[in-house]
Length: 406
Image (cartoon, rainbow, N blue to C red; front, top):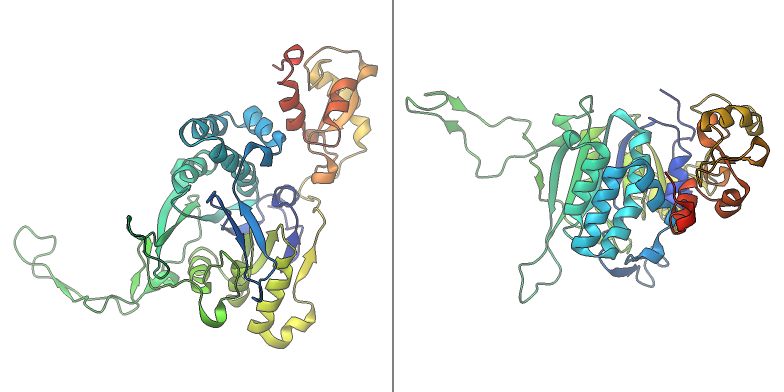
């Protein structure tokens, strides 16, 4: 298992797909993500709040997609591609676009998560059923552990519907998962009484069961954790309560473990991880996230904040979990033999001198010079691809009947 190629308390500003691609494999113990929900709304923090300036769009169309994402999924993950196609038929192109955005990122999260790790995906009923199917396809249906229902109150009451007052949290983890049941205990309800089993057909005639003094392990429906209010609330439009994140982190990680939040927003997961003695790394598109995590940690930790607690980065990390490569151009003969003289784009045969050594994932997006990330392209395909992913090239070629790929 490789060592992390990042330090504790790092927060990246940038596209989380590029940054995830640059993280070493199997280096994270727990992932919590609270991505956009495809709610068809635009969110912005109120002027004058601590989070003022934070905003994001949660309306998705095909124009929002990098066409390379769809090409990548169609080429390498056909089961996921079929799911995305089905979503477009049942819920329109907006849902397909949203799920495509999520799919390419979840595939990278699968790679960086340890086999003892867990992932918690926070969503709401707008897309939870589609995300459940996507998570099954990426992480494996056998690794589905819980659909947690977080119940809360407050807000408006509709006239023609029941009030929508819950979110969904999908939990996936492998057979070697970390789970601390005692860390997830809550007090029994006030009306809970000792249970007496009686009668010849009972499970244990005459035996009395008393409540556990430590409380009960919380069920998969969570109540008693309200949405942020008072001093905890900073005005971020989709802020989640610290108590919610602390329950997740306590249950599925140990002190010193690494927590990753790839859509960290106002960084509640990062703050909760710091409070509980975990290491953490966050990613967000907005530089406002760096300001907010510093602000909140200053409030939590006081003077410790002044010791350069948070490392803010805007670069794309370089993976160190694979052997150092030789100069990528020296692989041309090996690649020519592997590809049997065919271009990896159009699949046409060309002489050796026509080919150019190319990066499947460009170095500008975290790609390395390792052989597994190299290919040979003819001059035309190389010019079409440019400094973009191979999946972009495949998607472009599929639009042209004269360049049908195998």
